[in-house]
Amino acid sequence: MAPGSREARSADIRSVDFKNFAYRPSCTNKLVRVKEGKYEVHRPPERLLFRVVEVVYGDLTGDGRDEAVVTTYCDTGGSGGFTEGYVYTMRGRRAAMIVRLKGGDRALGGIHMVSVVNGTLVVARLAPETPEGPACCPKYIETSTYQLKGRQLVQEGTRERGDYELLPSSPTGQLP
Image 1 (cartoon, helix red, strand yellow):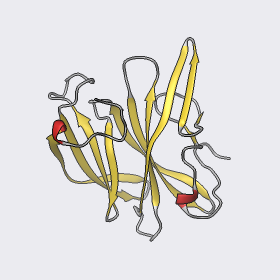
Image 2: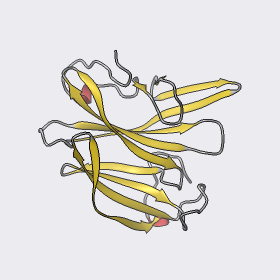
Image 3: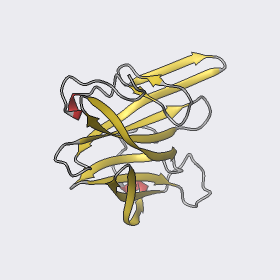
């Protein structure tokens, strides 16, 4: 079985159990197999917490079948908390990653929420008050929309910015 792929009972992406699945996150160079949405290692000097935060579905390829967007959180034992996403489609009876969705460290581009609206991927990321601002403390939410073109996410339009305090809490649970 290829890393990140998992055989499904049917050819529907919704039948894939992404909470019991294999990922290769950017925060580590190892293959991580989550069980019930979580992987944890606490053997000094290694510390790793990786969890699946959310799975959303929608047709991003225009073929009438849903893709899955999986958002994850990773903590390697320091002060950082890293998010990223993965877009999967079905290839035969297997889930196959199309593209990785770049995230960031908390307020420095961390993924707040994702959704699929009319074939477009909408991503809300956390942002500090200034570009060099602290990772701990988001001031803004920056929302971008993307179209999936082959194996690339292409941003459409300009990024919108809103105040962080005015938005509902994040499903990532990564910040206040």
